[in-house]
Amino acid sequence: MRVANYLILSYGKKGRLRSQSGFNTSGFNALPGGYRKTFPLGSYYYAGSQALFWTATGYTNNTAVGRKIGYDNSDVYRYHYDKNSGFSVRCVKD
Image 1: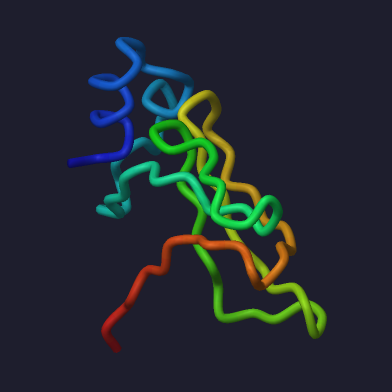
Image 2: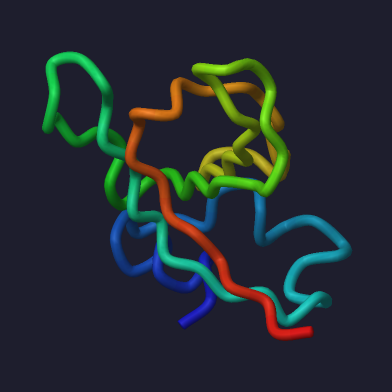
């Protein structure tokens, strides 16, 4: 199921992502699983509205680079997050 299609079912609206000219051209599929926050440990946030993924890029000893995609805009954010956070991973076959 495509990200925007899942979000339409969950929220009953398209959001801004689907209205972009490049929507659904890469073939990338994801479900917005949110993330597990480091404190309070075990708390989950934004399930159903954001997809957060780890990259292979470290930032500091305690942080690494992640990407965030949300239903409410067409941006893909890049930021460094605490390594103890629980994000999704995407495996890519060479």
